Image (cartoon, rainbow, N blue to C red):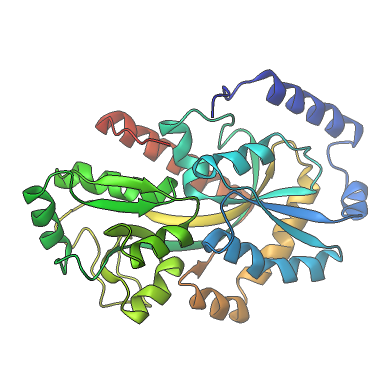
Length: 330
């Protein structure tokens, strides 16, 4: 990505949005009642089959039923999630184009890549959809059974190990491990989490950091060997898996999440209506069961709470990148 976050295109879009809001009387209730009058699309910035796509399709039926309009899922993968994210940042703030936002494109990418959007300023938060840990997994042919053995193996063979990822947190998890453990591994990029995990299972690469949902089937089948989980606490669905921090890397923590955002300038009444539909859906017992099947925990925060989370994580990752000097190729 080569655009500057303050491009003229985005500035013009913001100006148009402000004019539109003035015309609407700052998102009057009457306007919200008229919305939606046609199909709504949710942009997923990764390839089909990964957790972002799965989560979008979990909330799709409930949204359609409540809003009485079609909800279309549109995948726009590329540039570690930045391509689809920027597309939504540049879209009209009319409530008809939403983003299935993920942690890395929203809070991390602008610290390590050149992107054409600001993950905080160019979006209106609606709600957190889910959180999910990542899992470090090894191909069974790799003679390691835990993180300490992996680190020792890597130190004895600098540059020999490689790991698959889809950019974002799946790559950054490995970069953090390399930094904290003082080892050298090569990242092999894939266009989505599911293809990256499949490549590791096939033996094309030796390791992968994957969202729990992408890892689940391969772990159960024995095609990949789980070594540790990236969250700060053990995960209820796999309590036997130690955390990376427990495995000799104290302070290591990476947690994935997804949520729904709209372009900045979207009328507040539309944001409130979407949040009002999504939050009861996400806190239902039925959704909890569905989230369990993909190794995720449902969210349901308010727009303000979700906005605070995004802002705090953006600061956290920017500080980490600046302190460590970590470089990530795209």
